[in-house]
Image (tube, rainbow, N blue to C red):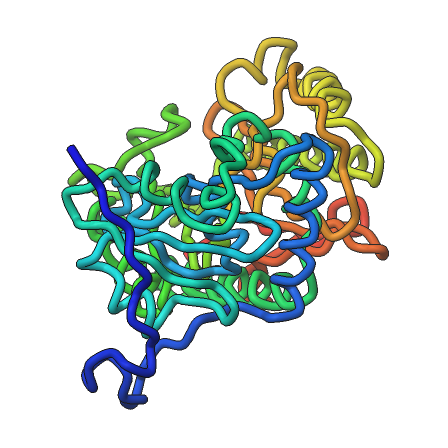
Length: 386
C-alpha cells in the first residue's frame, strides 16, 4: 500500500465551519512555556542517543508532548496521529479525515500538521516528514527504544500541567461526593457508575475506568459493575482523563455503622498508605518503595502475601500508572511528580491522586465535603455513612 504525505492547509484557510470561533469552541490546551521545556527534554534524548529525530506514537507520549491535545477517537483504539520531533521542528501527521478537527481544536502553536489518507500507514508517513528524512538522516528513533528516557522526561509536572491536574482532581472528587451521597441500598452498581460517567463526561473528561461493588461483591479488587444492588456497603472507582492527564480515585459508602472488623481493616489500610507516602521522597527508587509497601502490609496485619492480590499503583500523570511499581521498576522519584498508590486488602482499598511537592504529599483528588480522618498528619478519606 502506498502512502502520501502532504502539508495540511493552515487553520486560517480551512472552511469557515472549521475556523469560526463559535461559542463553546474548544481551544488547544497547550502552554507555550511548558511545551518549550518538553521539546528541550526530547532534544536532549536525541543528543544522548546521537539521533536526528524521534517518532512519538503512543497516547501517553503524544498527550504529554502536545500538552493535552486529544489524538484519539475510540478510547480503545490507537492514536489517529503520530509526531516526528527533529531539530528543525515538530511535525504532526494525522489521517486526512481527522486533520480539520485537529487543526481547529487540538494543534499547539509551532507544530506543523501533515496528512495521510485514512487508509494509509500513519507511522510510515510520519517517519517521512521533516528535514531529517529529507536530508537522508535515516529512520527516526522509535518511541519504544527510549521508553525509560521519555518516562523520566514527563515525571516532573510543569506549572501549567500541575494547575490543570489539580483542577481535574478536585472536580473528580466533587463528582464522587455528589453522586455517591445520593446512593441508596437498592441503587444498582450500573446505576451508580452510569451517574458517575455522565458527570465525568459533563466535566469534559473521559472515563477510562469505572468500577463498583456492592456488599455482595466486595471480594473483587477490580469489580466491573453489574445489576446487583449496593446493599449495605459499596465501593466506587473512577479513572478520568482530561487534557491528557489521568486522575484516579476510590471512595466507599456504607448504610450502617459497619462491623468492627471493617472499621479495623479500614484504619489499617490507611496506615499502609501512610507508610507508602513516607517512602515517597525525592531520590527514592520505585523498587525500594515497593519493598516498603510489602513490609507495610506485614507491619499492619495484612500478611506477607497481600501485595500479590492487586497491583500497588505508582507514578501517575499522562498514564493511569507510569509505571506500575514492581521490583523491576528503578525510576527515581522527583519533586512535583504525581502518584496514585492504591493499597488494598480483603474488602478494603484506599486511593487518591497526589503530587509530591516541596512541602510533602499534596492530595489532588480532594473534596472537603467528604469525611476524613487525620492519618500521619494528612487528611485521608474515610467511608461515607449514609
